[in-house]
Amino acid sequence: LDPLSTVWNAYLLGPTKGALFGSDLPGLELTNDLAASADPGVAEADGDAFSVTVAMRDDATWSDGNPVTAHDIVFTADTVCQFGLGGNWVANYQWAQISEAGEYSDSLGLIGVEAIDDFTVKFTWNKNPGLAIWPYSVGVAPVMSKAVWQGVVQEAKASEDPAEVLYAASGATD
Image (cartoon, rainbow, N blue to C red; front, side, top):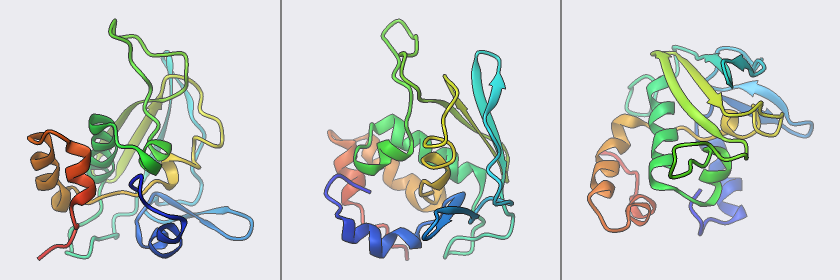
């Protein structure tokens, strides 16, 4: 999903990445991948914001045998936000812009991704997300393994160009 990827990367690698939901062609009907149900639910008013809570499957595992959890989703979303990752990352995890005064901009965006427990994740937006945002952006966004990528993210934090370090990482595990 880095800025140098091509449509061919998406064709080949897209189906290999875990996400809460997938979509079947040709009609783009939602299917559940990491979510417990194919029904994504609808964002509902939550104070001054809007949120949706998704139950996850508890039987999905990474290639190293570790379970895929809500903490992996939070880790991925936080990494995209913290480093301002571009390319398709920003399209999938659309974080709200915050002014220097600490106020959200008028444009729609995520204001929180929270692990309620190991297999329940809650997404919160500053405004009511439309169908293109929920579920068809963050709901189909790739999830990265916190156990595999946490060390790379720590290394990136210490660098002059964190995004470059992340994009250059191979992702290969021992």
